[in-house]
Structure formats: C-alpha cells, structure tokens
Image (tube, rainbow, N blue to C red):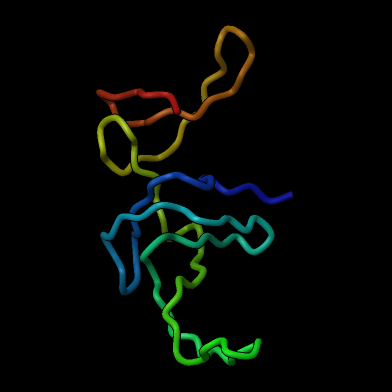
Length: 107
C-alpha cells in the first residue's frame, strides 16, 4: 500500500507548476496514483454532456488531480510550509508534527 504525506482536509501550498505558491485545502487523496485534488488549484475545463432531460450541458471548470510530491503541508499553528515529522505519544498514538525549529506543533 502506498502512503502519501497529506490527508484530506489538510492545508497545502503548491511547490511547482502554474499554480506555484498558492494555498488550498486537500479535497481528495488517491494513494494508488500518488495524486491529490486541491481546492481551487489546477483548474481544468470539462465539456459536460447533459445526462437527464432538462439538465444543462456545457463547459464546466473543475479541479484536476496533481502529484502529491508537488504539494507541501502548511502548519496550522505557525502558517509555514513544513515537512512532516512523526511522534509517538505516551498513550501509544502516532501523530504528525511540524518540523520547523521554533514550532513543533502536533496535528
């Protein structure tokens, strides 16, 4: 099973590509493809055909999937992009933590 460093609901910043530097919330994660869908990032146009009677068709803008290696997690406390560290608490649960020197926040 493949693992991805971000989860659904995380805030991330884009590291490369046309949307470099933009922040967004992760809407979906696909570990098998190593891809994520980020809200408002990598917008693509889809030509949609009407499926039911009375339903409109046309051109719709939607978020496209992008590789997870192109995004980096943003710490909720310090607001900076960070790598993820792991810490095991006293009760045995494994949590993610901010790797910035002065922060160290767990989430």
